[in-house]
Image (cartoon, rainbow, N blue to C red; front, side, top):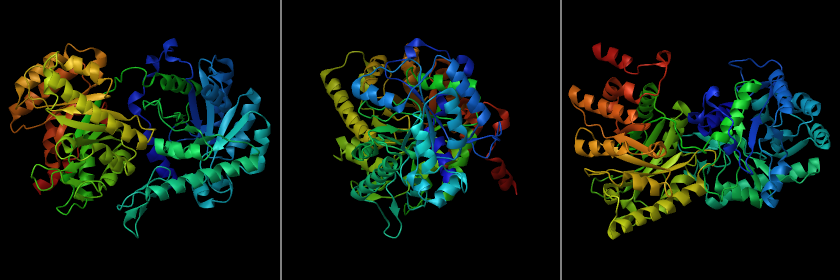
Length: 608
């Protein structure tokens, strides 16, 4: 269970879209800024690790690690200590260019009998993150992770500490595990999950959750300091699972240095957690060097990765009473896995009575009359089963017309869904005035300012609770009803200050004038501006000639450099037609060997 959870969490928090080919990676002096450093995270080290397909995807061979450390010693990279990071933060002491922090998680015995001798041989420092309860007898989780007798003991760690090459930090006392996260019994990281209490059919209160995390971190620090005679200042979060909320709890526990997993954070500057690149697949030194360079490149340039985005209403996955139908969810995930998309948008509230007023949410909240607690399960399955990034969508008019605070609603949403990758604020046609013209009227400016104000309130609330390991994005979604987009460029320029992306919903079949005007204006955008655009088509095709219009529109936008494209309202009963007509245009599958048609069995059943 523990290893399975770890694999799922790493798949969630690493962003495969930023991986570049090695030959495309170049060292660039502009990438190195004062205070920036790379952190590599290793786990077990064995002599017999397979080059491919080892039983432990996080293990590295003694040979590969030794060769990497030998290369480091000859290279112009400088291996730093955790104390260097602390001095850089507290006293503005500049870190060297190409600074590297070596870290090893969990306290495996190989840290003492394989890693430590190599550190002494090459005189290189490293940091070791310890799960204190494992060392002190939590045999179940420890054995599941590394087997019986495969953890260091305190005497070995004291020897390492006395070498002055080694620093020890907290990896929590007993948070390196999953706990019950929803009524559907998914297990999720203990540090950022408000535990679902099945007997009470409710969740931990904020107070109980905060106290549980604080007590654990305090205990971990106390044990480490007592056993090793140190004053540790850092927490390396299990699974990289940390929010701004838990970051503050760690500070209260005496652990002000906080480390997560993932690429360089794009979160607001008040978040102090550092990111770490995790080592997987038994890499050779050249591959590790490439990973170090990628770490520095992430987020410093406009994202050029492709996205294939599917927008879904969870109403399509639940019964009339709001209970989740796992069979429908499984069918949806199978369809998207075959289509090879990589991002989903879930519309997380709905108009239950079809009266024009939103009344129902798919997550626990007291702000609406009804809710069904199914969203966490849907998100977790989408991320762990088919590796999707997941965004949620909230409508602006919930606040402007129904006077329900979107910031408060966002707080409820993220308390139970901290692994989200993005939040979309749907403004419908309320920014048409800004999209149409380069000069905005006073009324238009006021409308835009109100939208941006609400947007920032929502974004700030999300940033308090979202997992820092995710490359979190905020998005403004527009559904224009206009025939010119002269203001698109200006809005993107201004929008970059307030929103990561702008999502434009179009229908080339029903509203060709709007689509054509958008396509023409998009050709005038810079590459950076195009990377800030997402476009979703509201598919209304019924005949073969209709599908040709969508295919042509997708191809036009891709040819112009817009790489984040998708379907605005995907439904289960549309899946087969979309697969048959738009697979080439939507799919990110780059190999015929990886193709699987989910409708073959369905077709055979129909002909029986």
